Length: 176
Image 1 (cartoon, rainbow, N blue to C red):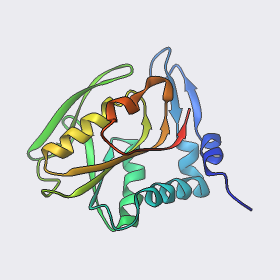
Image 2 (tube, rainbow, N blue to C red):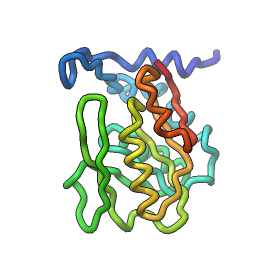
Image 3 (cartoon, rainbow, N blue to C red):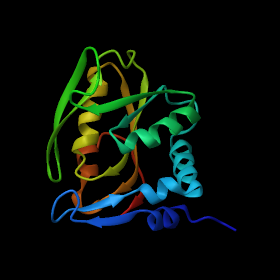
C-alpha cells in the first residue's frame, strides 16, 4: 500500500479560525505531530529532499520549527540551532526585524552559532509571507553560515512568501 504523504499531512493539519487574532486562520500542526506516521513521514521527506551528508546545521525557527529541526538534524548528523524571538538567548546575539502577516517581530540567533561556510538548512512549520524565513536566512548569513535551503510543512500560496526567498531552495511538503 502506497502512502500519499501530502494527503496525510493535509488531513493532520487543522484550521483554527480567528487565532491568534480575528480574521486569521491559524494552521494547527499538533494533530500531525501526534501522529507517528505523519510526523516521521514529514521528517523523512525533508531529509530526502536535501540529501544526506549535505547539511552541517539545521536552524529551527521558534517555536514549532524547533520540533521539526531537531529530528531533521539528527538524520543529517548535524547540529541544531534555535532561531528565537528577541530576548530568549543568552550571550552575544544578532537580531533581525521582520513583518508577519498580522504584525511585526524580531528574531535572534547566537552570534557564534555558525562557523564560516557551514551549510545550514532553515526549517519551520509554515511559510506565509516569507518574512520569518528571510529574517532567519539573513541572520545565518551574518553569523557566517551558508543557507542552502528552507523546508516547511505547509506553504500558504495566497501570501506569496516564496517570492521573498527567490534566491533559496524552498521546499514545502504541502501547499494550500
